Image 1 (cartoon, one colour):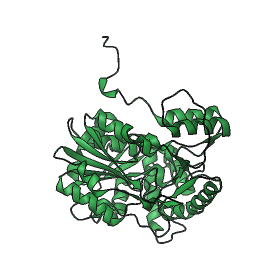
Image 2 (spheres, rainbow, N blue to C red; image 1 turned 30 degrees about the vertical axis):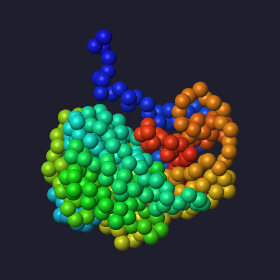
Image 3 (cartoon, rainbow, N blue to C red; image 1 turned 60 degrees about the vertical axis):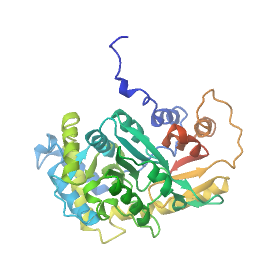
Image 4 (tube, rainbow, N blue to C red; image 1 turned 45 degrees about the vertical axis):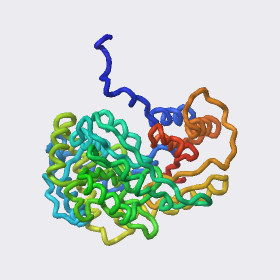
Length: 405
């Protein structure tokens, strides 16, 4: 066999839902309510800070390399932001690492903390990169789904629950970590304190790490409260919390994210980062740092602070989308957080032509919807492992962080 080929560890990770359906939306000029990016600009003050940083009139070094693990100004303001949320006094240089989006931070966490032969518990549905990242690290994923316990009518994301017995059955002496997404994408579930305590109890019992993807942390609706699992007793020393500038400031193309955690977990991630990415764009980090400094200064004003005002802006869009979906015969799950909505399509009774693939029904439905109705959404079975794809194939995922949803 020729040596002129890719690494064996990449086998089975080739397919990517964003590549296929992003292209399909462009090819058919469809309304894109699939991919999770806003169709409006970030807050003006953050844009102004970016322009100022790139201009370099006051500091020409903002166009040069900055500290590998995070621009000093950025990690300092992140420490101020996250210290009260985690119940810790964070050291900005040792408890925070910055990389190219939360994607990059997650890669550094998995590659920097997980060994070949380890097992990693993944809560389903999960963001689709979790599974390939774990496999490429040489570890074995163990999957446990949240399932809707309500069978009829419009659901809340709180109606999706973990089974405690099923969850613990996935843990063993080989378990190195569990990966959770809170709020969950695509369901929008915001885990309650008792649910997080259940997960925390298993992390402590089996002495494993919790990788908590919390990039939608600021988009929380109604009277729901987002609790960081790192803030629970005994969890700080075993938790990596992921955050995202792109999600926080509606600037997904800026690709900047961070991980927060104890120095013994952050250090391996920093080592991985320095040897594959080294550093992130200085002007972006400076702009995000200044943006967060401003948000902290107005945090008491919910309508002025973007960390809280975005959710106030998105809630009517969420509710309008849910109403429209009910009117056309879909059954939505009303999200407690994030900017996605799952909708049950099983009652539509639409005869979808065979597209020649062996893909789950939701993939075929979404292709048909894009080609015939010029509407692009995402098939949620992409967020489940092969054994559990049936749990997602009667749904589609909508994104409502749009000017007009």
